[in-house]
Structures are given as C-alpha cells and as structure tokens.
Length: 295
Image 1: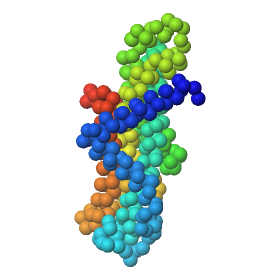
Image 2: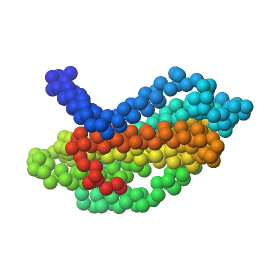
Image 3: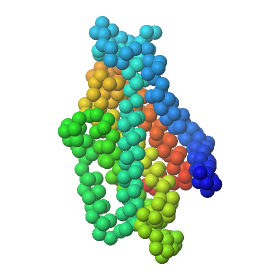
Image 4: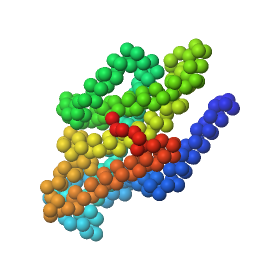
C-alpha cells in the first residue's frame, strides 16, 4: 500500500468518526443512535440469552399474563412472547438493511448516470421509473411473493428494487446541481469519459445526499416489510417477526394485550431510531431534509 492510499483511508476513517461525533452531539441523534445500536446488538445477541425455544408450542400455557416465568406473557399457542419479541427484529433488520444497500447502489448509480448523459436516454429511463412509481408497491410485492415465495433471497432484491426508484430521482436531481459546475466542464474538456467523470467528479459531490436518502428509505422499507408480514406475505411461520406477531395477536388486544404490545413497541422503536439517526446524519452532513419531498 502506498502513502497516498494510506492517507485516503485515514481521511475516510476520520470523516466517519467526525460525522458520528456530530450526530451523537445532538440529543435526537444520540437517542436515535442508542436505539439503533440497541436493536442491532439485540438482533446479534438474542439467540444467546432467550429463555425458551421460539417455536415451542404448549397449549396448556396459552395466553398466560406476564409473570416471573414469562416476562412478556405467552401468545395464543403458548409460546414465550419475550423470546419471540427479542428474536423478532433479526429477519427484518437483515432483509431491510441489505435491501436498502441494493436500492442505494442501483438507484444512486442510475440516477447519476441519467443526470450526466441527459437527452433521450434520460427521458426514456425516467419515464420507465415514473411508470413503476405509479404502481402501488404493495400490489407488486404481493404478486412477486405469490409467484416466487417469501424467502429472503426473493424479498431482499424485490424490496431493493421498489425502494430504489425514488433514489433514482434524488440522485438525478443532485447530479443536475453538480454538472453545471466548472470542474465538470473542465473534466469534459480534458477528454475524460462519463465513467471517469461519475467516479471522480460527481459521486464525491452527491454521495452525501444519496446516503441520507438511503437512510430514509431504510425506515420506510422496514415498515413495508412488516406490512408484508402483517398481511401474511413476509416471513413464514413459525419464524418470529414483529409484523407477523402483530397480525396473529391483533384480535387479542382486549384481553391479552401483552401479546401485541411487545412487537408494536419493538417495531415502532426501531423505526423511530432509524428516523432520528437519518435526521441526525443529514444535519451532520449539512443537508436539510425538510426541503426534500418524498418520491
């Protein structure tokens, strides 16, 4: 490794640390990061400390109220709600995190490319994107999972595609703000090709806006994934999942509230944590989310 590459890595590490410190310095950012790190830590460590088998059914213990033996009570099949709640975010985090990465990559790169080349290519691609944006994503997702199943290998790329469409428009708009700059004109005059201009000139200047948009999409994707599970098209039983747990226990709210409150708290707290983190991330990078309209 030469000195230049080593310095670049050090600069990147110091920039990440600087952004994290700036995020944590604000109360909302500190709360958001704390909630997010808690959920990630819980997802990683929960198999090591949960007291019961998440799929063990015991009819004699069905709908037990919270007690010393069952901290969050039991559900309609006699399964421990604490165990299933602690494990319930694992699949959602994995699916939506990698789905967000896919959305970020394809949406960001395609939007930057269209913003740079313009012309007929840009017009055709954006009309296709607009056509897909006009289709309710939930109907398209229901069709996909009905045909291909509900495995993570299907859900991750499908969610990544549908949530990446909006990123295309954001990246394209950010690119339009950059290509009018003098350094882009200079790069074209020096004979640099489009790939070189995208990698060396445009991406460093639109990266922050695209990353913030990706963070925002993560929380929306999490809610969308849980909606699929709620409708019975997400993860398959008996896999613990908050959306599926809410769906199964929603009719028990009047007399077994503990079976539905726990997954609601788990899901809502994670969404709030991601939103607070994304907002703090945007502020740390100097981006005003209030001026960005969702697409």
